[in-house]
Amino acid sequence: MIPVERMRITRQEDGTAVIARDLPWQKLSGTSFFITGGGGFLGGYLVRTLLALNSSRVLDQPVRVTVLVRNAAKARASLIDVLDDPDLQLREADLSAITKVEVANSNYVIHAASQASPRFYGSDPVGTLLPNAVGTAALLEGLRESSDPRGLLFVSSCEVYGDVPRSSALHEESYGFLNPTDIRACYAEGKRFGEAFCAAWYHQYKLPTYIVRPFHTYGPGLQEDDGRVFADFSFNVVRGENIVMNSDGSPRRAFCYVSDAIAGFFTVLLKGEPAVPYNVANSAGELSVYELAQLLVNLYPEKRLSVVRRQTTPSASQANGISSELLPDTTRLTALGWRATVDPASGFRRMIDAYLE
Image (cartoon, rainbow, N blue to C red; front, side, top):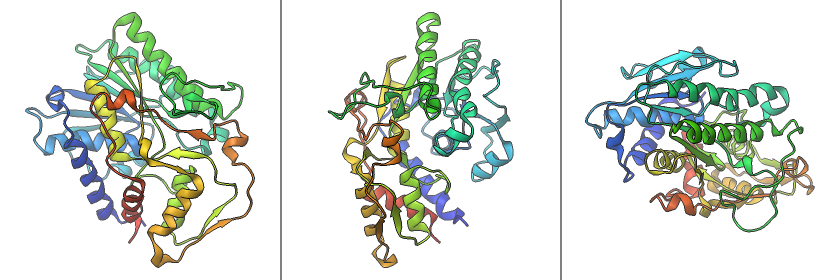
């Protein structure tokens, strides 16, 4: 069982950290948001941050938040700590359907609905692809018909870069090879498609669209069956298990704590350029997969855990054509005044503690 109160307090503290950022929050005063994926990890943080703006009285007038979810029962369970907020409303719909979505004259749309976990790519590639592709188009059309549309924020992914050469940090134009017929590409191709829609709607209709590309983002709210290595390792520690590695652990990633990522998203929405992608990542949080495993067991010496290496073959991600290094250049985002403040040791400790009794 997840310790609900500890999780609530941790998320509340993270929201306070985001709101403390020096951003023009008053631009959001009295506006309405339409958020997809609010029952998920990043979407849930976005919802809670907006509601926290209201309770902190940072704004002259409150923000109203409508959350579009595919499964209302699961979303209520995920958002149980904020369900009674009078400025929150849930709506149920499936963004895999090819249709326009009514956004009820919202000023902003944040599209964070996506199956980010690799466990879905083989079992439900259609359900992974469509919300990022046709779902984005449906939301753009809905916002275009709003009486006062101010912007759509599309939560993309660093996986749009594909298989890039091992070189310097990836800036926003560093695209590599991506095979569209590889079933695992359903996620990355869907994100690429969504970004193309955002650029097209801005170019043709002057509808403001904003694109963020989060790199490996972690924090409280990740599911135990997420399937990504940083989540799997973290829950090994939560359960008091040794971390067993079935690869050489050499791929390097930049790990970003969720409050830093959410602050980056709002920085782009409030200060960024339309239809221009921004990497959102902690470039100082770079670790190899093996180094991450060692860090996590070292954070909890009282658990007496070890990293067990069964073999030293290349990782599954390398075998599937994903770059062994996905390391970000965040120059474009830091030029807007953003910076990461939570290092991996502090962030992973904060995340894991939120799950411990």
